[in-house]
Length: 129
Image (cartoon, one colour):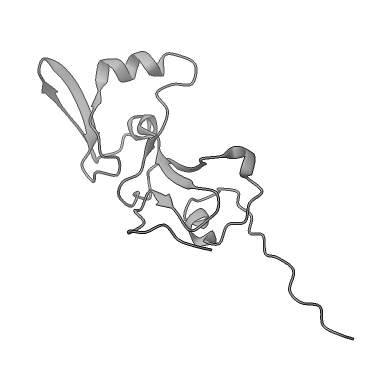
């Protein structure tokens, strides 16, 4: 299996035939009272972000609140740095219809506590006997 060129960031796995992304839920940061969340006013709007830069963007508080009030909420952001133990994370597969494909890097999936995973290996050669 070929690996895509370049380094694999903390947020993704490129070794598998199904591209996987590690995501974090900013709503979990707020709900859990994470001490690594900061906020400040920028151009008359409040924004918040992660001091550890687990996700690499700052989020408009008003827009975040509006989306959290809707079905589905704000959603997840791609992880750009290794998540902290208190981060609410998950692994999203790019192509769910290919979920049966083999994962050659189970450590990536195991790095998310409680995440279901499967490792498929082709059958080995039959031995006589």
